[in-house]
Image (cartoon, rainbow, N blue to C red):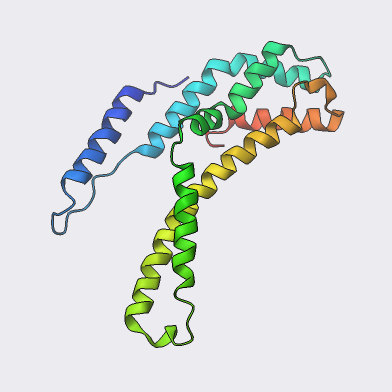
Amino acid sequence: MMNRDIPRAIEEVATGIQHMLNHLDDDGHAAKPIPIEKLKNWTRESYQDLFHAQIKEIITKLKTKQDLTREDMQVLEKWMIGDLQMYATMEKHYEQWMSDLLSLSTTLELYQCDDIHQNENKLLELQGLILELDHVLTDFEKYQYAIERMHRFKSYVGAYAEELTDTQRYELADMLKNMLYSSLY
């Protein structure tokens, strides 16, 4: 386990964001790097380290057709989708995104006119609208992906891993092994 100074990385990210926000009006100012990827990776890797030994035992059990205990299943679920469950609990903008998407879609329809391609102002407005729509869609899709991934985990693994076929057990074990030894997942 490497030394990951998460509190220092949090400070760097918070300071970077504050610096960026405090200097939005500066001419020619380059934004201070914000090491969010480092913080994300260190946090994920540190979390994985907490369960490293247990996950290795679960991999062995899956490959040798041993039953997984209720505790094994809880560890497996926390380890594979715990971050997504926390995100889904913490995310408070989903309803607003749906409302925004409906509103932006309705506004988008106003630009359905035959001469749009010759109207400079309308084309610029449409470009701005599309930028906003793209940002909201991206957030909405990331949330939907998290929810779908949780559902896939629960339907694939279910409450009892004994119900998995031998092939599914090996696939799950290999997936866990890849996650265990990968710096990114």
